Length: 171
Image (cartoon, rainbow, N blue to C red):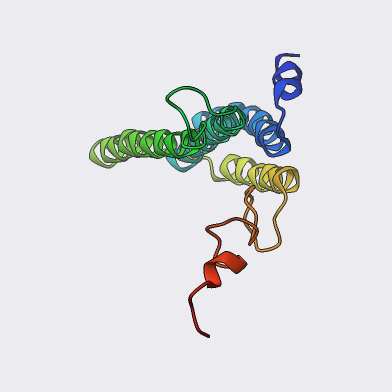
């Protein structure tokens, strides 16, 4: 119910798709954490944290997109478009923090040699993860050349494809 309210509030269709992918990913994070714990696999726990960073990036990006739609005001004469860059920076910092935690856990496991694994459980969890990636791929879709994004290709004043950028240049 909470996700449906959040999705209804998302005005931008790209933000809506990002939030839908975040919801699917959140469900799998729970499965992956349980699978990693039950199988004793740091690799699966690592993937769960990686997926958590993806969810955070989806949510941050969706929020940045929503805020960037606001009109310019007062001292924000260019509007709120720069919030997308701030969102990307926050996502990057989160990924580095999670990497540090995982490296410390890996060093701890190497040092204490605690590696009792259940490969069949690991395989099942990983196979389900491939299915979830396919679902998210279908939700997010592609933009002709493999990237999901919301910019145009040639109709802005700063575009390399724009007629304005050809002024004064000889070909």
